[in-house]
Image (cartoon, rainbow, N blue to C red; front, side, top):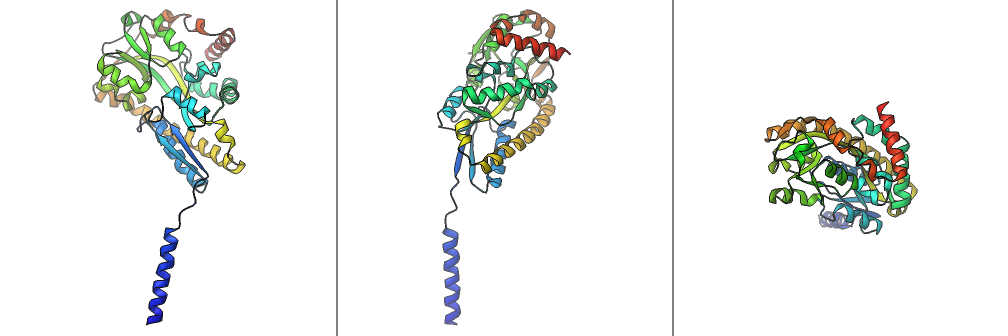
Length: 327
């Protein structure tokens, strides 16, 4: 009996010691900064990415996600990645300060059909953007997310460019956006995304423009009455990692990382399509009124304002894209 008890307690002690043995620490802990909230498809996709990345790397890579610009605003996040302070984010034409050709990711009145996004990203334009993101900005794209069609929200209906006169509109800090809305008669106000809701609430700005999914998850229906169907931008964004951070991975983890990122893109596209289908109905149910606009009048009044902001090289690309899409 005494021997049995000794054996039992000995085994219990071994199990206790095994249970207390610390798990292996991950070789790489990545931090991703997101401008969107936790209900957005990009953030949900990154959560999925983190799960499969940790699983497939056997715990060697761990990804920590921070939503709603908790770590940094979009431009600051890019600089922090370049400095090696954080590792990942999602961005688009805001990166054109480093990579000029990225202005085409969100070019007003250029792309009319979301299907054309896939054509552009998977063609010569997308290849050039990817190469220059790495060589000029030290940032590696690991896929792309469709951003959807952008619409103008406001507290009065906007059917024609004349209705915009003097309207204070928040825009991303992208020259093409600023020039387009100024040409249309509005007062374009660049502003960090995290400040938009409060600024609308306080009346500092009177309108903003974003895809329906972003309008919904950001709660803009609480401070805006109308969605004006301007459809002025059809765009995409890049999930990315710092090139220096990526090159620190051994070859086997590089392969794991890139495959997990490809699966993240597929997962996000599924979420995006589901959300796009329901977003309008949900916003209408929440009290927003959808307004048909004279889109041709918007395009005519904008004229060459955007084209004139481009360098000669970018003007050539603009003309080629426009002609290719017409075909």
